[in-house]
Image 1 (cartoon, rainbow, N blue to C red):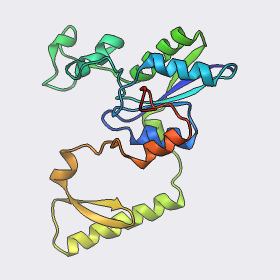
Image 2: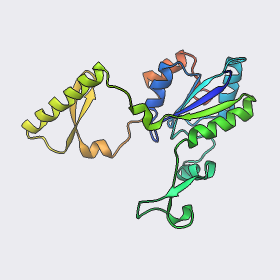
Image 3: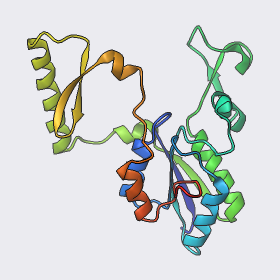
Image 4: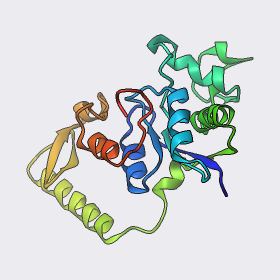
Length: 212
C-alpha cells in the first residue's frame, strides 16, 4: 500500500516485547523505553531505506523522544494525547481535568510517532495498537510445556515449604524468585543486550544516532 505503519505494543517501562517482535518481523525501526528516540533521525532512515515502499515501525507504549526530560515523563501522555477517562482510583490526581481523571494512554505512542513521521517524510502513515491483543491466540506446544512446567515447579515449591516466591524461567532452569524482588524492579533491556546487537546487525533503526 506504500504506507508507513507504526504498531504499538505493550511495554511501559521495558522494551523486550517490542524488541523481540520487531526483530522477528524485520521491522525498519524499533522504539523502546530504554533508548529515547530522535524522530528526525528515524524519518531520515526511513527515507533512505524506503524510497517507494512503506515501512514498519514497532514502538513500545513507553517509548519517548530524546528531547524529553525525565521529570516530564509522567505528564508527556497528556501533552501529546488529550484523551482522558474517568478514574476509579481514589488517589487519582485531580489536575488532569474536572474531577478526578486518569490518562487514557492506549495508542498515544504510536499516534505521536505516526504524525511526526508523516510530517517529516511526506509519506502516508497510519498507526495500529496491538496492546493486549498480542496476548491472544491459541497456545503453542511450547506454551503448554512452559505452563505445565510452571505448575509442577509451583507444587514442588509448596512441598519444599517455600512461601512468597514465584516461578521464573531462567533458561535452561526454572528458579524461585522472591515476590518482593519480582514486583519491585523492572527487567529492562541492558545496553549490552545481544538482542540490540542482532537488531543493529540486521540494519534495524533503534531511534538514536550512534545507537542504531
